[in-house]
Amino acid sequence: MTNPYEPRFLLSRKGRYITIIAMVSLLALMGVAVGRTIRAKMQSASAIAKKDALVERIEASPDFSLRIQQDEDAPLRILEVKVKEISAADYEKLTSIKSDHASIISAPEVRMVNMSDKTICRVMLFVNDATANRSAGIMRHELSISPGAAFTIVPGDFVKPEYRSAADGNGATSSSVRAPMKDKNFWLPFADKSQLKVRVAVEFQDGTKWFNRDQTGGGQ
Image 1 (tube, rainbow, N blue to C red):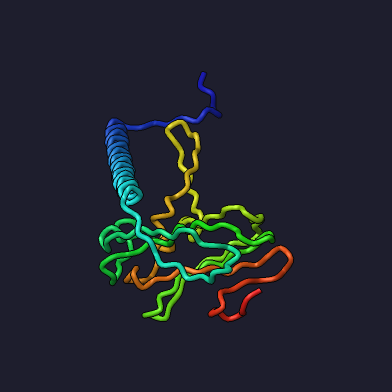
Image 2 (tube, rainbow, N blue to C red):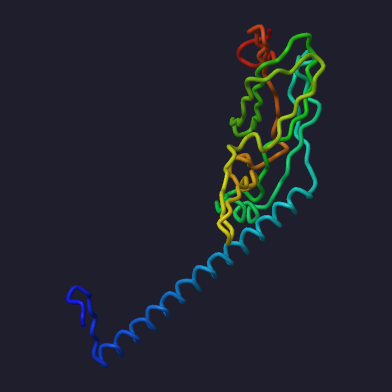
């Protein structure tokens, strides 16, 4: 006996054909979409691999020194300043930004040592281009550089870290940090490295400050 409350779905032969055709079409469309997604991911991975290879090449390239501007009695003595230089084409590959300069200079790596008898809690680094009357810089604070201790500012300090997450085929998530070199702030807006000078100013833990004598603010 047929249950009067049991739902029944009746399709004619023509209806079954239409349903089958619709299902096949849907599967075909899904296959196209999946294929496009896979190709897009492969292209993206290929682009990332190329950029990472470029980063490695630039990291292995020669360093260039910049001039140091400091008084003889500077409490935080600059020992060395070095930068990288790349072409405008490589800069665009890294950052996706065009530049009017023929070459681009990185933010500096600056090695320093505390020559004073005080602990330094803040460092202000300036890169000046006297010919263009422009400067760029960075401030590091909440430091504790004791007397005689070394301190280094690297180009990556000019860049805010950018984290990226990705999931594998099993759903496991991993995080990575975007290469600082791919950020525009890693690079300086100056055209001629020979015109650049680097200087620092500091603040001590006791609240006193030090500047080069030719800077506003005077000495300690």
